[in-house]
Amino acid sequence: MADVTVLNSKVTALGTVTELKLAAATETTADTAQKFIITPDPEKQMGRCAIVIENAVAGLAFSLAPGEFWASGVALTGTVAAFTSTLSVIVVESAKYKKANGTMSLTLTPASGKALSGTSSHAAKVGFLELY
Image (cartoon, rainbow, N blue to C red):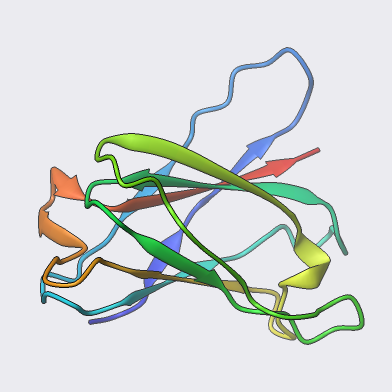
């Protein structure tokens, strides 16, 4: 299945409300991972950002690929809570995970026998908040 583009929800000032834009998984095949492409603001060399995962399937694993610059290291991996319909937040420094083309790559993998998306209303979703 094709990669999913995640829109940047920018937090531009303290004390303001920002809409969180979520991109839904489209992969309907069981046991198949899907990549979400995140593009931080190219004007910011590095900064704190929050990746938000809405879990529609139990036992969802994630992997944030390491970047290609001096600050990069190893992939950030983990498992999102085994409960469905929850929001999980991962706060990272973008410089550690940004590739040369300015994007970050997050891969979601469902639990064994599960799919990331069953219908448009029942799919794992990813959002991105850039903290200014």
